[in-house]
Image 1: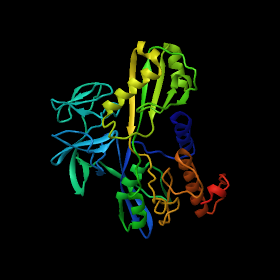
Image 2: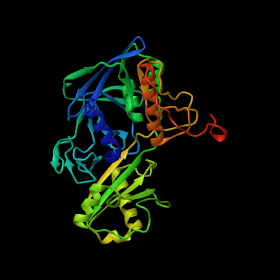
Image 3: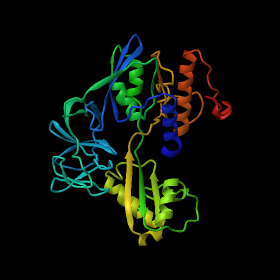
Image 4: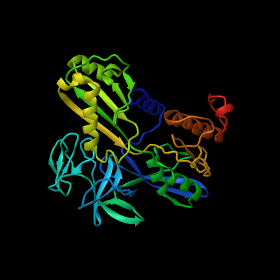
Length: 369
């Protein structure tokens, strides 16, 4: 996705005079007269000081700490102090050991009970946080460091095109004369079960009779496998130079109660990989990476009526994403792209410019809404 979609789009934006602000956190969206008037943000590679709301995680058993969040955004809380458990090396979730230290399951980085690095490959300490507020079971966490410098953007139009977690977080940052219907629609978006993807580098290749991306069934966690050393240029080049292989296993939707930690995810992925490709039992594992997030859009029964559309009640705000209500049947990546095109059309129409035609299925019969 990065090679074939994200990077070319980013390059096209910059080639046409656009600017992309990276490592940036929105700190406030100011609203007035049913419009967004400005957007404030912080920028930098260190932790953002923008407060976040997190839900409790009852699946991590620990008598010493309380846990909030899920996937690769888990936080440990004790009294009014909190700690982000996202490893500063490559983002895996560290887990508390019997002696109070925190260990990364992916690459072995070790931190003390205060989150300070004891052993690499991590170079930076875990991010300390503090509890700022409570709303029922939710906690609001904020960085302990002083807020960094902020900057402001004013624009004719604003597009929220994030995942569900991002959209909910941005809705909480709206201030001023906020349109509460729009804010509540975003705040109440449902989140689906988490997903996990594990990628493994080995020192040898193996025979494979199936497609380079193959759906699987009958496994506790894995639902598909991808052979990246057969499909993507940089991995093909690496495999040709080393004789190795790069294999990825996917679990697009799993139950947290069955795999409450990233240790359990990695152990299961590894065991199932050796079952799917027995030849790899004799290979040396060179490297592994894990992506584990809980930010897919959920579609519970009865949610369609309150789902926000591309055009909102705020005159200069449009929405795009796989969670937006659409006028024709589509889902997942197709819904994200289609909603983006509809958002662009809405802005073109407001500016008096020609809109782009979108082609879809004929909305008749079982497809008629």
